[in-house]
Structures are given as C-alpha cells and as structure tokens.
Length: 185
Image (cartoon, rainbow, N blue to C red; front, side, top):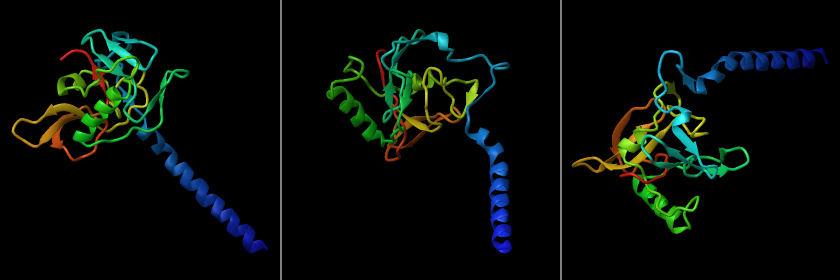
C-alpha cells in the first residue's frame, strides 16, 4: 500500500512540475503590442462598427467583415465564434461567390476578396501574433490570408502573413484564411 501512495505522489509531482514549466509558455501565443513606442496604424477610432458584423474604415472607406470566413458573428458578444476555414486561392474566390449568391451578408451581396493593398491596410504595425487590431477584428488567427491579387507572370497570388505583417507570393493551391471586403477598388 505504501508503494502505491509513493507512486501516486510521484505522478502528482511530475504533473505539477510539467504544468509549472509550461505555464510561462502560455503568453507566447498571445498578441503582443508595442503601444508606447509605435503609433497605431489601425486605431479603433478609424473604424465604425455597424453592429451587424461589419466595419467601415474611415480612411479607405472600405467595409470589412469583422470575422474571418468560417467564423460567425455573435451579436451578443460582438465577437467571432467558431474556427476560421482555410481555402485555396480558387476556393477563396468561390467562397466569395457562395456568400453573395447565398443571400449575402449584412444586407450586401457584393463582397469580394481584397486586393493586396487593401489587405495590407488593416495590418496593425504595433502588434504581432496577430498583426491586426483585435478590438476591431476579433479572433483573427495569426496565419496567412489570401488577397485577390495574382502575381505578375506567375501562377501564384499575393497573401499577407497576419503573424508578422509580411506579404509575399505563393502558389494558389495552398490553403489560407479569407477576410471579405466590399467597396473601393
């Protein structure tokens, strides 16, 4: 009986040690912002929240969906529920058509994939992991998002990495996140 008690205590100590060792890593996955040293590139005051899952950017005059495709807007919490879905570039274009042909969103049926300049306009330069204003675009994953901009003379398309804010070109068969916009161009 003593052996079982000692073994049980050893297992408890191991678990406690693991938890205490891993606890400091929990902050690694949280957004970090340098508000004291870097001016906000997308301050909350720049956006009007329409209360229907859409936002209007007063600088670009674009209307954005608050939530990444795959997530749903929660009017009670003003947040985004569910998990983001990744699409190939062609799949992202098809998702845009599916939203518009399925009755649209927030009374609009002209949603589209943003071009690379538009997508870069919502990058929050004072933050990382993700590089977006989470007060405006809640629950945005720190991942790649497709733009509508194909690469010149190539079979790829432009994307923005919402972990660090870099943009680049990749093959269209890779699966990335999608955030829809309307207006502008």
